[in-house]
Length: 352
Image 1 (cartoon, helix red, strand yellow):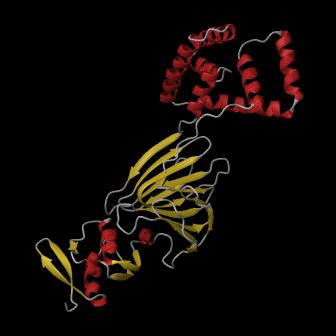
Image 2 (tube, rainbow, N blue to C red; image 1 turned 90 degrees about the vertical axis):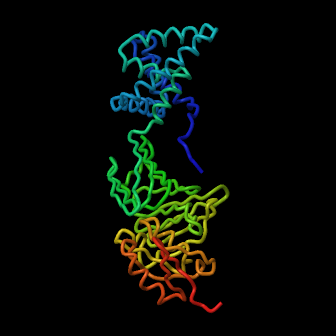
């Protein structure tokens, strides 16, 4: 699943009327028009609220970045070109008005045209609204961890070999976990929900601390895991899956298709023992254990025997001190370590 910003929606009648009045009042109104405007404003409290929303959007133009202005200019130019193809008197009047406004000061022109009642102008404005206020891509290398503080005050702790793409919009915040695992400490903001997208799973929060794991490259560990340390999150899977709500101390996993499992309890080791330099395995196949160690660096260990690869491992280890794992392994499993040049093969000691 690759959710994307919602496409522009048609304006409601009230919003369309408010937008029309807002655009018209950028120039001087006649006495009759001014009287009509005040009559409309007093007719329904919803009118005043809609107009206030447009004024709020107008003020947001002060935060419009340079590249946003350039993008909006290009879209408005396309809108004007499309308007030239119209043949009705009303559309010709709108076209002339658009062209006249485009000739005035750049920011005022952009804002006025964007906020005009013309459909294309509104689409351009809405496109600008969908541009992130902040965007960033982050990646940790094997064996590296990184702490990230976002402009909204939320923090991310990235584990080794983890990739995320962050986008903070005006009405929502979004992080795409492209691979690896991370802990999120979200700054509460009721007006801007925080979403983490991992494969086919969407996690939505307002303010909490939780972890998400998404490692599709590891055979047997393709599931997406969400664990909550404090607060609450909503977890939505693929099509047809119910939305599940997790509280502090709870966890859930979904398969690669987004099918959610049952809610369980967070293990005693916590939502992310890797923050403290620990990896915990619970009845995990040896092949998967080695793949997990491989996320932190080269292990130098090799398994060729499928039966050995399927042996189960339980325990907590430091991924940066692999010698401890090497020393313990022959004591807990029927295996031996056989050195072969630069690698060490793990072989069975069971009688054939």
